[in-house]
Amino acid sequence: MVAQNDEITRMLGKNMIDLIINKLFKNTVYVEFSDKWISVKHVETGKTFEDKPLLAVKQNKKGKNIVFAVGAEVEQLKNDTTISIHNGFFHPRVCINDFEIAQATLMHFIRKALNKKILFKPIIIMHPKGDLKEGLSQIEDRAIKELATAAGAQKCYVWVGRRLKDVEMISLNFPTQNDPIVLE
Image (cartoon, rainbow, N blue to C red):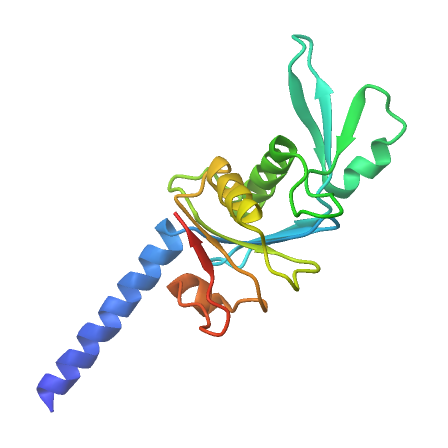
C-alpha cells in the first residue's frame, strides 16, 4: 500500500512538473484562418486573438513598407491615401494569395495571442477554413507550412477537419478519422 501511494505521489509530481513546464516554456499555437477572419490561440494559456485578416501598409521616411494597422481597424483607414490595404488570404481558389502579407498578418496575430516575446519557437497548428471538400492541394500544403515556418514555427501541422480540442493540440494527438498532414 505504501509503495502504491509513493507511485501515485511520484506520478502527481511528474504531472505537476509537466504542467508547469508546458505553461512556462511550451507554445502551441492554433491558427484557424480564412479570407474573412483569423483566430490565433495560445493553447497552453487559452489566450485568443481574433480579427479580420486585413493589413494596412505604409511607407516610412526611408521608403520601407511598415505595418501601420491590422484587423478591423484597417477598415477605418480606407480613405487614407498614404496607406495600402491588403488581405493576404483573399483569393477565389486558394487559401493564401499574398505570402508576405499573410506572413506579416500571421506574425502580428501570434504576437498578440502569446502577449510576450517568443523565447521558444512555437508549434503551430494551421487550420484552413472554408470550402475544402476536395482537400488541400500539395501547393497549398507547402505554402501553409512555409507560412507557419516564416512566422517562427519550430514545427507545423496542417489540419483539415473539425475544430480541435485543447488536449489534442497540447498532446499533438489528433483524431485518426482525419489524420493531419504533418509538414516538418
